[in-house]
Length: 95
Length: 330
Image (cartoon, rainbow over all chains, first blue to last red; front, side, top):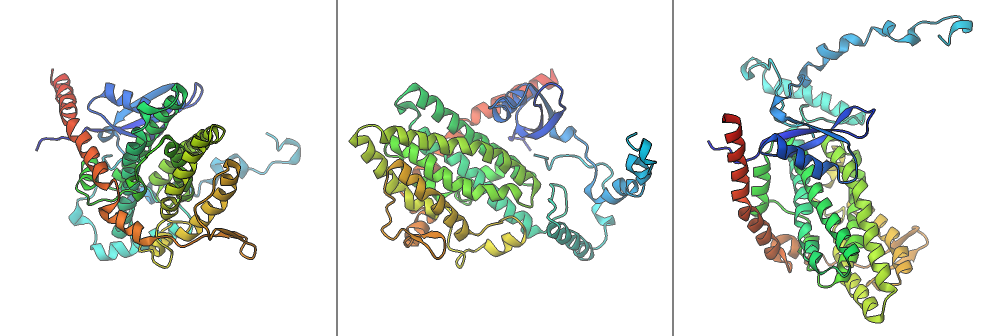
């Protein structure tokens, strides 16, 4: 079947230098160059960005939401990974 | 707006999953807990089919409204009275296009394709906001659309930034930030006209007379008549009822009309000391349903223009795809 719809791209924008690129939305575009152009027009009309990444959506591999418990619950009971787990004497507690 | 196209590795084949009914009961319970806790539902999370369908219907109608909404205003771009007003109107209409795109993308995360959404609009199966089936007769209409129509839209949209479906809520955050400019430029345009000559003031009054009641209708039928209200509020899609939003809009707008110096065309509009709100006259629901059902002044013209733009652009979309294919195979 002939595909008529332009592929989907996910758009990531760096608001200003010093910050990470952050996912902000998606666009349809036939190729990478036009995806960047569309992302600029749709997502940076008010100086929201200094750099744009576009990634074709079907190239992104995502974790399965159904696997959330086995993926993320093991971290739940490892509270010793946080500095607040350790109660130190007042004199040195700012450590 | 996280996409439905994202690949999830090592997915269990469907037949290995437990019987659907048992699974659904568990998932439903988990879904209900999330909603009760005020958590967001995200694109790949399990959701009841009716929730998904309601969202697709609502988000796509919203997207269609933004896109069709470009037409009545686009009509005035070449006739704007000054270069400044022309730049502002261009920016506003471009924003509406952007809003449509954010929303289409949010709808697509629910597993419907852009082409299907557009087909539903063009075939008349999907609705868009009836307000855009009224004509823009004078330049004052552009101001009144910003003031009243966008003002009403903002009232409707702010609670949606907290709706339970994450991609929709995030799209609405972006939209609300931008809508504020739309309403303010409209009011500014009208203020300028009101400071002009008598003929200009008459134009503003005339536009207010024509747009006031359709703006009140934008909030939808009364709560007692609303088809979707109760379930949507249970699902956290609709946080404030039609009538409450309409009341907020009237209360906010009456003082603005005074500043502007226009009369709101409702003899029954009065401050109700006891309620602490304005009472307003009866809305003509016969007119509302007439326009919803396709018999407004511009329904036919709007849809024809949309379909024509889509069909006229088909060769560009196809050529761009052919070019992209050629680049990857070269």
